[in-house]
Image 1 (tube, rainbow, N blue to C red):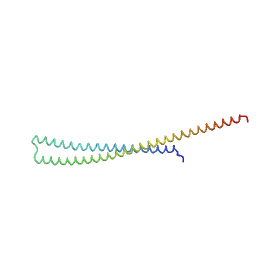
Image 2 (image 1 turned 90 degrees about the vertical axis):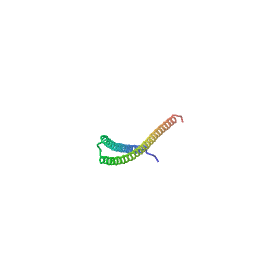
Image 3 (image 1 turned 180 degrees about the vertical axis):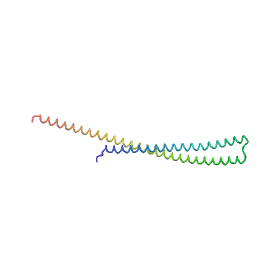
Length: 161
């Protein structure tokens, strides 16, 4: 059974090209999930800043003695609402972090598959080159054998009988 090394190398080249496409797609997905994670983190930080600004404003009003008990209760209720928004933003951030982690794992797996495809291509190309070298060596050997045979026949013809 003879292996068509050129065909195998061509198949491995197509597999490598396909793997490169998968890596590019997975890289884009990982970059997008990273951007979403950054957005979620920024939104969460914005909610924390909102709460800080709220209490700074409340403290400023308290220092001026201009806050009634009802206003203070309202500020506390608003602080609770801000806490809920912070918690929700934290959940969104955690989900985005999990999604990004999964995308990174998928990307790493596709990179591993690309490295494997590249290795298989190199092996096929080496085998193709080895087969080509063996074929050339056989041709040279046949040519040498033919030359020797011709020389022997020519010598035999010149020799007196």
